[in-house]
Image 1 (cartoon, rainbow, N blue to C red):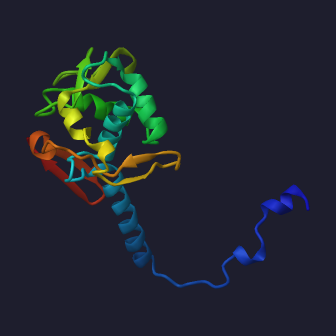
Image 2 (spheres, helix red, strand yellow):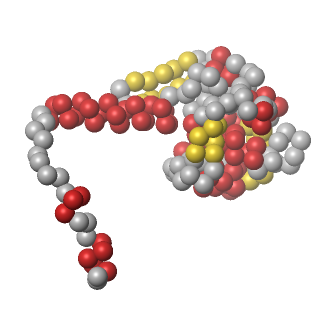
Image 3 (cartoon, one colour):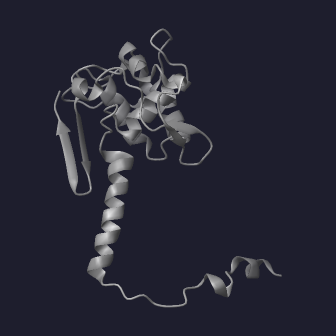
Length: 193
């Protein structure tokens, strides 16, 4: 059998009949599935720990990298790269933006990341991730502290090579302390601190 014949599907894999569906019905069903995916996977925080998935993955990645309050600061670019490679297969800019916001005292009631370097101001964005350093704060350690005690559910990562927490144990009421904002398909949230 030739290589090309192996790539072609057999006759059983093709549709045998055409199903009539109105465009309006298909759009409703597809839009709902897409919007729910965006809402739960990226845009809206989980009330159990008050974090969006990217924020949770950054904290979890930093914990596994050993970047704790009693250790030296590490390059933000390294944290972003580890988070993107292991847990969050999206752009590095979105990951660094989330990391920087968790370090800015003017953006949060209680910071979860201890910054070193130019993490921005009300008027200016943070410096590039290669110029800044970070580590977890004591508050962040309270968020991740009981992960090894079987307190939360874990799920497979996007590539199935590791696991990540569905939410963090969160001994702090993060949603009340820091508030949150999020924009998704068809809905938004804005909870001030």
